[in-house]
Image (cartoon, rainbow, N blue to C red; front, side, top):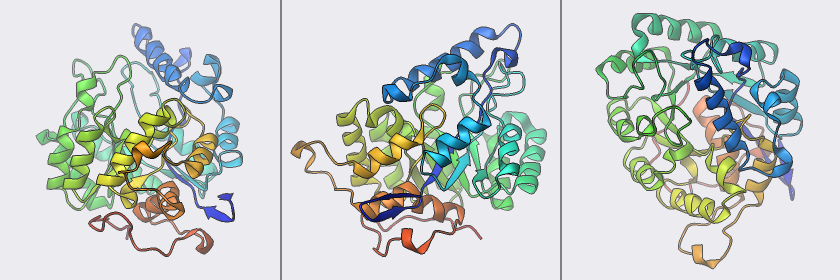
Length: 346
């Protein structure tokens, strides 16, 4: 929980990782991909405040103590949601896997929500793994990585017929929150494989699911805003938007927030730190203090304390059925749009 000027904020971080990118985990013969991937991530960290930058050795494989301190002791967070990323093509045991995240979920069950993943190219085995994760960890969401490499394949589309069984299975299992990486690419993946065009198809076809578009499709922010306006079950995941832009490019961040507030609304946006690329402490504190830099942004909606509380935790709490302390709640009616078709957790 974070408190500022007498206001209490319940913080739900919808996008964190617990990865292992150490050289011991690199696939022989594909070391250049494993090394290049984590170095690209490390470059993104450089867009945050200098005092939060890590040395490469720590960045490749940080400890459980690092994570618990950065997120909960210093980072003001109440609940954090793991979003897995396999990348087994060049990391032997995977990069940020459900199994590795589950280690912390088991030790701190009240602190973490563990999401699963799927990839339609894995067929029946992938379906069985999804069912197993839901049964074992109570997953209420999945993270999709449409640009991931498997063998000769360099990505997949949410429009692929093979994906239909997985979306239908999510509905059957009560996995209603579909987080999709649509936005910045990371070397050596293909930027086009993160294009959002396939979200339109899936969100229209599977109206019983929420599609949280991580990184709000950056750099395609206008495309995302029109898509999320059209589709009532599409939400804006702010990870990367806050971490990469709020400190380093404040005027661009103001434009992004202005477009999101104008088209999407404060009831359909969720906070994500993208830890460990960026630590949450400065992001939470800076966001609570955030406002447009000057009057040139006066034609965009303003974001007040109630809206910041929704974005930092209350909207995600609704998506995941998390109880929120009374002192952190807001009484106001939806301020920007009233067409959100939230698929409530049972």
